[in-house]
Length: 206
Image (cartoon, rainbow, N blue to C red; front, side, top):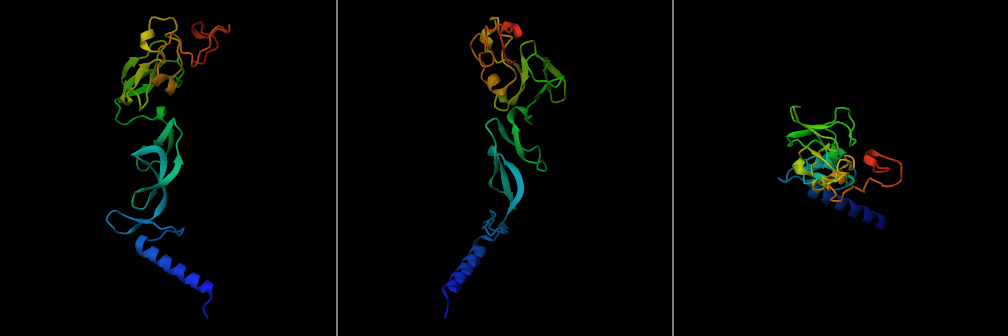
Protein backbone atom coordinates (compact mmCIF):
# COMPACT_ATOMS: atom_id res chain seq x y z
CA UNK A 1 0.00 0.00 0.00
CA UNK A 2 1.29 3.46 -0.95
CA UNK A 3 0.42 6.19 1.54
CA UNK A 4 -0.54 9.72 0.37
CA UNK A 5 2.46 11.17 2.20
CA UNK A 6 4.77 8.95 0.16
CA UNK A 7 3.14 10.12 -3.08
CA UNK A 8 3.56 13.76 -2.00
CA UNK A 9 7.22 13.21 -1.21
CA UNK A 10 7.82 11.56 -4.58
CA UNK A 11 6.15 14.46 -6.38
CA UNK A 12 8.28 16.93 -4.43
CA UNK A 13 11.48 15.11 -5.36
CA UNK A 14 10.49 15.05 -9.03
CA UNK A 15 9.74 18.78 -8.97
CA UNK A 16 13.09 19.50 -7.32
CA UNK A 17 14.92 17.38 -9.89
CA UNK A 18 13.19 19.27 -12.71
CA UNK A 19 14.18 22.60 -11.17
CA UNK A 20 17.80 21.48 -10.87
CA UNK A 21 17.88 20.51 -14.54
CA UNK A 22 16.34 23.78 -15.69
CA UNK A 23 17.81 26.34 -13.32
CA UNK A 24 20.49 24.91 -11.03
CA UNK A 25 20.07 25.38 -7.29
CA UNK A 26 21.08 27.59 -4.38
CA UNK A 27 21.90 26.88 -0.77
CA UNK A 28 18.48 28.16 0.33
CA UNK A 29 16.67 25.93 -2.14
CA UNK A 30 15.57 28.78 -4.46
CA UNK A 31 16.16 28.40 -8.18
CA UNK A 32 19.03 30.37 -9.68
CA UNK A 33 19.28 31.79 -13.17
CA UNK A 34 21.72 30.86 -15.90
CA UNK A 35 24.23 33.22 -17.44
CA UNK A 36 23.58 34.82 -20.82
CA UNK A 37 25.51 32.12 -22.66
CA UNK A 38 23.36 29.37 -21.19
CA UNK A 39 26.32 28.01 -19.21
CA UNK A 40 26.68 27.40 -15.51
CA UNK A 41 23.93 28.49 -13.14
CA UNK A 42 24.30 31.96 -11.58
CA UNK A 43 23.94 31.61 -7.83
CA UNK A 44 23.01 34.55 -5.67
CA UNK A 45 25.82 35.81 -3.45
CA UNK A 46 26.20 38.17 -0.52
CA UNK A 47 28.31 40.55 -2.60
CA UNK A 48 26.73 43.96 -3.13
CA UNK A 49 27.22 46.54 -5.87
CA UNK A 50 25.76 49.64 -7.51
CA UNK A 51 23.65 49.13 -10.62
CA UNK A 52 24.75 51.88 -13.06
CA UNK A 53 21.25 51.93 -14.55
CA UNK A 54 19.50 52.25 -11.18
CA UNK A 55 21.53 54.04 -8.52
CA UNK A 56 18.64 54.54 -6.11
CA UNK A 57 19.43 51.26 -4.35
CA UNK A 58 22.23 48.87 -3.38
CA UNK A 59 21.88 45.49 -5.08
CA UNK A 60 22.92 41.91 -4.38
CA UNK A 61 25.08 40.41 -7.12
CA UNK A 62 24.85 36.86 -8.41
CA UNK A 63 27.86 34.72 -9.30
CA UNK A 64 27.62 35.85 -12.95
CA UNK A 65 27.82 39.54 -12.04
CA UNK A 66 24.11 40.23 -12.50
CA UNK A 67 21.99 42.42 -10.22
CA UNK A 68 19.59 40.02 -8.53
CA UNK A 69 17.57 41.95 -5.96
CA UNK A 70 17.65 45.07 -3.80
CA UNK A 71 19.67 44.91 -0.59
CA UNK A 72 18.87 48.47 0.54
CA UNK A 73 16.79 51.29 -0.93
CA UNK A 74 18.49 54.69 -0.67
CA UNK A 75 16.61 57.74 0.61
CA UNK A 76 15.78 60.60 -1.76
CA UNK A 77 18.93 62.60 -0.99
CA UNK A 78 21.27 59.61 -1.44
CA UNK A 79 22.36 57.21 -4.15
CA UNK A 80 24.37 54.02 -4.36
CA UNK A 81 28.09 54.78 -4.25
CA UNK A 82 31.07 52.54 -4.90
CA UNK A 83 34.47 54.08 -5.67
CA UNK A 84 35.66 50.93 -7.44
CA UNK A 85 34.82 47.24 -7.81
CA UNK A 86 36.61 46.43 -4.55
CA UNK A 87 34.88 49.19 -2.60
CA UNK A 88 31.91 48.52 -0.30
CA UNK A 89 28.66 49.59 -1.97
CA UNK A 90 26.50 51.81 0.21
CA UNK A 91 24.01 54.69 0.11
CA UNK A 92 25.77 58.05 0.25
CA UNK A 93 24.56 61.65 0.17
CA UNK A 94 24.55 62.90 -3.40
CA UNK A 95 26.13 66.21 -2.44
CA UNK A 96 29.10 64.34 -0.89
CA UNK A 97 29.89 62.28 -3.96
CA UNK A 98 32.73 63.57 -6.09
CA UNK A 99 31.83 62.83 -9.69
CA UNK A 100 34.85 61.15 -11.38
CA UNK A 101 34.17 62.96 -14.66
CA UNK A 102 33.94 66.40 -13.05
CA UNK A 103 36.93 68.68 -13.65
CA UNK A 104 36.34 70.78 -10.52
CA UNK A 105 36.06 70.20 -6.78
CA UNK A 106 34.79 72.14 -3.75
CA UNK A 107 37.29 72.85 -0.97
CA UNK A 108 36.37 74.02 2.53
CA UNK A 109 39.66 74.98 4.26
CA UNK A 110 38.16 74.90 7.75
CA UNK A 111 36.11 71.79 7.04
CA UNK A 112 32.83 73.68 7.63
CA UNK A 113 30.16 74.04 4.96
CA UNK A 114 28.08 76.77 6.52
CA UNK A 115 27.27 79.82 4.44
CA UNK A 116 29.79 82.29 5.83
CA UNK A 117 32.82 80.02 6.05
CA UNK A 118 35.61 80.23 3.48
CA UNK A 119 35.21 77.99 0.45
CA UNK A 120 36.57 77.85 -3.06
CA UNK A 121 36.60 75.63 -6.11
CA UNK A 122 39.67 73.95 -7.54
CA UNK A 123 40.62 71.78 -10.48
CA UNK A 124 41.33 68.09 -9.92
CA UNK A 125 44.98 68.91 -9.20
CA UNK A 126 44.03 71.25 -6.35
CA UNK A 127 44.75 74.54 -8.10
CA UNK A 128 42.36 77.25 -6.89
CA UNK A 129 40.14 78.48 -9.71
CA UNK A 130 37.82 80.75 -7.74
CA UNK A 131 37.40 81.86 -4.13
CA UNK A 132 33.75 82.25 -3.26
CA UNK A 133 32.86 85.75 -2.15
CA UNK A 134 30.87 86.68 0.94
CA UNK A 135 27.31 85.37 0.69
CA UNK A 136 28.22 82.59 -1.73
CA UNK A 137 29.42 79.05 -1.03
CA UNK A 138 31.08 76.42 -3.15
CA UNK A 139 28.42 73.92 -4.18
CA UNK A 140 28.64 70.65 -6.11
CA UNK A 141 25.85 68.24 -6.94
CA UNK A 142 25.81 65.54 -9.65
CA UNK A 143 22.33 66.67 -10.70
CA UNK A 144 23.23 70.37 -11.04
CA UNK A 145 25.58 72.29 -13.37
CA UNK A 146 26.69 69.05 -15.05
CA UNK A 147 28.23 67.92 -11.77
CA UNK A 148 30.77 70.77 -11.76
CA UNK A 149 31.51 72.86 -8.69
CA UNK A 150 30.56 76.54 -8.60
CA UNK A 151 30.28 79.44 -6.19
CA UNK A 152 26.56 79.65 -5.65
CA UNK A 153 23.74 81.21 -3.62
CA UNK A 154 20.28 80.07 -2.63
CA UNK A 155 18.96 83.45 -3.87
CA UNK A 156 18.71 83.96 -7.61
CA UNK A 157 21.11 86.38 -9.28
CA UNK A 158 18.16 88.51 -10.40
CA UNK A 159 18.02 89.74 -6.79
CA UNK A 160 21.69 90.85 -6.70
CA UNK A 161 20.78 94.47 -5.96
CA UNK A 162 18.53 93.57 -3.02
CA UNK A 163 19.69 93.94 0.61
CA UNK A 164 19.40 90.25 1.52
CA UNK A 165 21.19 88.84 -1.52
CA UNK A 166 24.28 87.94 0.52
CA UNK A 167 22.22 86.43 3.35
CA UNK A 168 20.54 83.44 1.80
CA UNK A 169 20.41 79.87 3.09
CA UNK A 170 23.32 77.58 3.78
CA UNK A 171 24.94 75.03 1.50
CA UNK A 172 21.97 72.65 1.50
CA UNK A 173 21.33 70.84 -1.77
CA UNK A 174 17.59 71.51 -2.09
CA UNK A 175 18.00 75.25 -1.51
CA UNK A 176 21.01 75.59 -3.80
CA UNK A 177 19.48 73.58 -6.65
CA UNK A 178 16.38 75.78 -6.60
CA UNK A 179 17.42 79.43 -5.94
CA UNK A 180 14.51 81.59 -4.92
CA UNK A 181 13.60 84.73 -6.88
CA UNK A 182 12.21 86.36 -3.76
CA UNK A 183 14.24 89.16 -2.15
CA UNK A 184 14.81 86.95 0.89
CA UNK A 185 15.09 83.19 1.15
CA UNK A 186 12.24 82.49 3.56
CA UNK A 187 13.01 78.77 3.58
CA UNK A 188 15.54 79.37 6.34
CA UNK A 189 15.01 82.97 7.42
CA UNK A 190 12.57 84.56 9.86
CA UNK A 191 12.10 88.34 9.92
CA UNK A 192 11.09 90.75 12.64
CA UNK A 193 11.49 88.70 15.82
CA UNK A 194 14.13 91.06 17.21
CA UNK A 195 16.76 88.38 17.74
CA UNK A 196 19.18 89.78 15.16
CA UNK A 197 20.94 87.29 12.93
CA UNK A 198 23.17 87.89 9.95
CA UNK A 199 22.19 90.97 8.01
CA UNK A 200 19.37 91.71 10.42
CA UNK A 201 17.31 88.86 9.01
CA UNK A 202 16.05 87.53 12.32
CA UNK A 203 16.39 84.05 13.77
CA UNK A 204 17.67 82.43 10.62
CA UNK A 205 19.49 79.20 10.03
CA UNK A 206 22.42 79.98 7.75
